[in-house]
Image 1 (cartoon, chains in turn purple, cyan):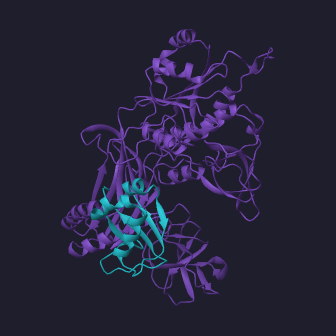
Image 2 (cartoon, each protein chain N blue to C red):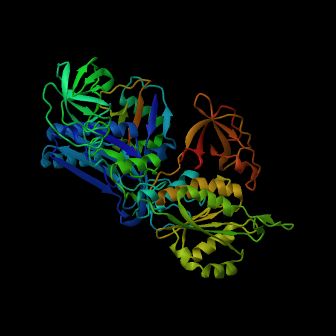
Image 3 (cartoon, rainbow over the protein chains, first blue to last red):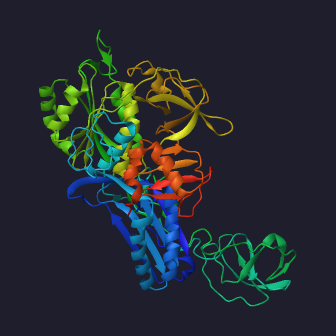
Length: 550
Length: 79
C-alpha cells in the first residue's frame, strides 16, 4: 500500500490530487475534518492543535497498514494540520484509493475512529469568538490562561493568522498573474511531453531492427503529426522535437548516418534511443504547482505550457495607510525646530510593493475630532479596504489616539500591545474580513512590525506562506543588556563562501534609529532576558521580503 | 534518557521535556515512580496516560534504556 503522511502548519489545499499507483484504482474516497464554529457549546474562532510529529506520522502509517489487512486498499494520503486553525478550515484530510469503493469507505471510517484513539495529536484550546482587548480566553479549559494583555511574538503571530482569512481568489490572465499567490493546486491535464518525440535530428527506425541500410519513407518536421506503422528496413527522417510516427522506435543521429538519395546506411549504432517519451516530464494528473505558491516567471511558463491561461490567484489587496503626528513635515520640506521629516509613507508604500497592493495614503491631524472629520470624507474608501494601517505619531501615545479611532471605525481590537522590542505598542484589530494595524510611529518599530505582523496578515489574506524564521550564525558579538522583552534586532545577512548564513547585528540605540534601516535585510530574534550573544552563536532570524523572494 | 510531555501534561510539569537516568530495573513502573517523584502532579493523570518508547506505544514488557526517547501520551484528540 502506498502511503503519504504529512503534518503541516499551513492551510491544507482545497484540491488534492488523487494517488493512482499503477492505474488499478477504481475509487478515490476523500474525507475532510473541518473546524466547527463551536466547542463545548460556545462560539469559537479557531482551534489550536499540537502533535508529537515523529510518532504521529508512524502511528498513522501503522494504523493504515493494520486496517488495510482487513480492507485492502492501494494507496492513502493523510494530511493533518497543526497550530492554530481558523473555523471553517480543514484540520485533517484523508484520501484513499482502492479497486472498488467498498474497501476505501470501510478503511476510511475505521481509520478516522482509530486516529481519534491512538495518534498523538491534541486539540489544545479554542480561540473565543468573543475576544476582548488582547486577552486570550480559554474555553477548552486545559490551557494555561494567558490573560496578560502583553502578547508574545508567537502568540501575536498566531492570533493574526487565526483572524485573517484568505480573500476570495480571482481568475486573471497570465500576463497579470506574476507575483500573485496561486489559490488552487494545478495538476497536469495531459502527459508532458504529450507524445514520444525525437531529441535529435536523425532517422527513426524500429528499435530492434538489425538492418544496416534503410529506405527513407517519409520526412517529419517539428509540427508534423503523421502516425504510421514502420516496417523493418524503413526509416523516417525526423527533426529535433518531431512527434514520432509510432511506438517501439529509436532515433539514429544524422551524424551517424550516410545518406544516398532515399537510402541511408548506419555507420555507427548508438545505445541511446534519443527519444523523449510521452509523460517523461510529467504524468497526466500529477500535481505541478500547489496552492499557496507565489507565481514566478517559471511557474507562469509552466501554466502556459499546460494551457492554464486563467489561473485562480489572490486578488490585489486594497490598502489604506494614514500617517499621524503633528510634528511631521513632508520629506521635501525643511523641518522647523521641533519638527521632523515624514518617512513612514515611503517606507510602507515600498514594503507593500512585494505584496501587489493598491495603496492609498493620507495624513491625519493628531486630534481625535479633527481626524474623525478627515476620515469621514473618505469613509467609503476605508470601508472597502482589506487592510487599514495607521502609523502612530510620536508626540501623543499611539494608544491614546489610534485605538479609539479604530474602535470608532468599528474595529474590534484583538491586541494593543506586544511583548516585543522594538514595536511594543502594536495594535491589531479586525472588522469582519477586514484587518487594521496601528503601527508604532518610529521608523524602526514600523519596519519590525511590518515584517512580522503586517507581512503575516498580507500573506494570510493572499492565501500564501507567512514569513518564517530561519537559522543562522552571528558574525559578530551582539552587544545588549538583558531586556525583559523579546527583541527583533536588525541585522545584515551575508552568505559565507561555504554557503552558510552569517548575521552582522546593526547598531541601534532606540526605536527612532533610522540609520540601520538601510542596511538591514534580516531581523535576529533575541530571547527575553538574554543580554549579549557571543560571536558564532546560532540564532533564529527572519529574512526580509526583498531577500529570497519571500 | 529524554522524556517528553505533551498537551496538558506540559502545564502540569511546566516543561516539555526532562532528562532522567534510566530506571532500574528498566521497566515502566520504575519510570513512573521516578516521574512522580519529580512531578507529583502527574499522579492524577497516570490512569489515562500511555507511555511511548522511540515513537511507539510501550507495552507492559517494554524496557527503557538511556538512549531512548520516551513520551507521556495523554488522551489524544486529533481529527
